[in-house]
Structures are given as structure tokens and as C-alpha cells.
Length: 303
Image 1 (spheres, rainbow, N blue to C red):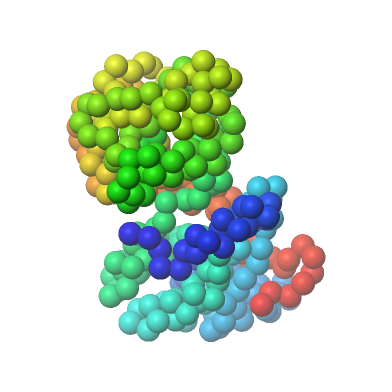
Image 2: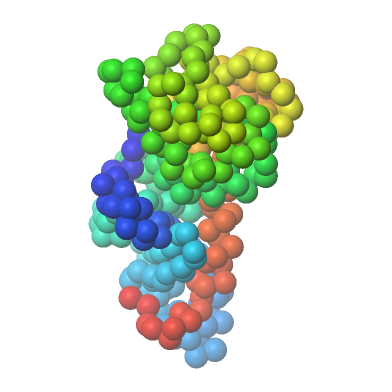
């Protein structure tokens, strides 16, 4: 399920205009933050104490070369009545979203899971290609790559694989040197069917001319794999063909679906499951833990 405030058109326009992708990260001040509020009272940072204990959002932005993080800290007072939290959170997220993707801290997702709006916020969007690329590169190099492609819903086979090719192009960004195998698992094919796509798609032809690497499209992963394999799952609701995954594969799940993790842990203990959700939480928290109780570097007041 797509996040209700994800604006694909604005995201695409940002990429075309070379504007860094903006990711909105929403967290909350919780009861254990009260000690920090007390310390802030004695250090002269009264605005921190008021925001932690008060009823107003705390916001700041951290910019990097390829991505910009916008942090929204919800006041503790919002957490006291979960029946009202959803309405306020919907307003806060709608205001923050714009053309950006939204991510929520684990504690906040747990709170939402107990509310009527939990179903809306429990499923996060598959990250944009720039974010997926970032997560992929953090795993190190693997010469064999399988990508579980999203379902673009095209009725025509060639329209479906063209949509897939555009995503692959944005995801790889030409970084395919050294790959010994590239397999795309597509909804457009069924079962064990496999076809080579360099004659069908110009981008895949370009890869083949550059490296001699044929891009293979299949209905399921290939049993014949090699150590040094990574499988990148970009399809929500995909039923993993776990028996067909190569041994010791790194399974990078961009959908962060708990059922996929449970299945692989139960059926394929040799496979290392990696969740985009956990990686992004760690990646983002490193950048905001040192900022959440501090004034902004440019001395501009928080909103």
C-alpha cells in the first residue's frame, strides 16, 4: 500500500531539476525525554524544555549532497491521548509531505499500530530510487544481483518492461561495472520463463554494449546462483520463491514487510535478511540524535 501523502509527480520533478531528495522523518518526544527537558532548564535552553513538554512541533533540516532530511518532533502531549493523535498526525504529515517521502520512528509506528489509523501508517512506501541506491551501496559489492521489480500494472508486456527499465536506470545510475549477473524478476513473466532484454530495451542494450552483460528478465529468481549474490526486493506483497534463491544471498527488502523476514528466517537460515526500514532508521538517527536537543547551526529559530 502506498503512503497516502506520497507525491510521485513532485518527486520526479525534483530529480529532473537536480534538487536533492527530501525525506521527512517524524519522531516524538516521549516520557523518557523529560530528564533532558529538566537539564535544558538549567542550561538556559528553555525553548527545548517548552517544546518537549509543550504542545508544538519542533522542526529542523539537515542537508547532505544527495539527500535532505527534514525532522519533525511531535510534542509529548500528543502521545497522551492516542485517539486524538491520529487526527493531529494526519495534519502534521499532510503539511510536511509535499513532494517528499515520509518515514516514521519505530516507537511512533508502535503507538500508531494500536489506533484506527495504524493500518494507514503501518505500511511505508518503497523508497525512491535515490534512497534505494544508497541502501544498496551500503551493503558492499556483490557481483550477482537479482531485483524483484515492482508491479507497474501495465497490461502490455513491453510497457511493463519499459517502466521497469526506467526504474533500473535511476537505481543503478550507470554503476553496473563489475556485475557478473543481473536478473530482473518481473510480474510480466510467469514461472521459470527467462528472456534476454538487450534487444528489447535500449538501456539494457547499452549495458550489454558497455560490459557484455546480458540483462535477463524472469518470472522467478534463478536457482543457479553463486556466492556473492544480493536480491533486492522492490515489490510490496511479493511471495518469495525462497527455494530458488542462491545460497548465502543477502536479501535487501525495500518493502520492509515483516512476513518476508519471518518466512526467510524460518525457511532459509543461510540467507541474510536486511530491512530497508531498519537501515534507514539507523542512518537517520545518526543524523538527528545530535541535533534533536540543540539549536540549529545557522542560529535560526525552530518553527
